[in-house]
Length: 126
Image 1 (tube, rainbow, N blue to C red):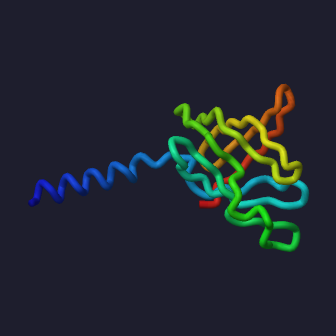
Image 2 (image 1 turned 135 degrees about the horizontal axis):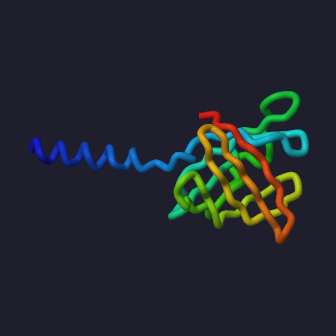
Image 3 (image 1 turned 135 degrees about the vertical axis):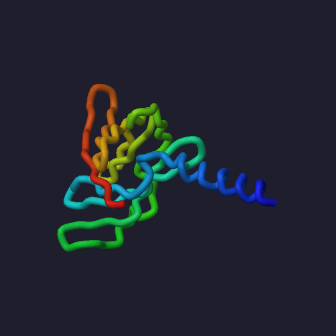
């Protein structure tokens, strides 16, 4: 019985220990007068970022984009590098190939269509 409890405790703690360091809530930069909090979490075998809160100059507001995926199919390559994802820019309704680079509480996010790239630096909220 004691071995079973110990085994179960090890299994449960191992799952928590394997959470990707990019998981959490991130604040985007302002784009077209608004910014968002994006919750990054596993989805399938990849990472996705969903718009969880939206803000403008007047404060928090209920955007039509709440709950929509902003980032998807992002793959961890190790060492804080993420590749092969897609990112949606709500202000232009365009989807870009995306990559991210994590350094502490800063996440550099870029999206490209051909040679044209857009970049933002997001900060960790939680």
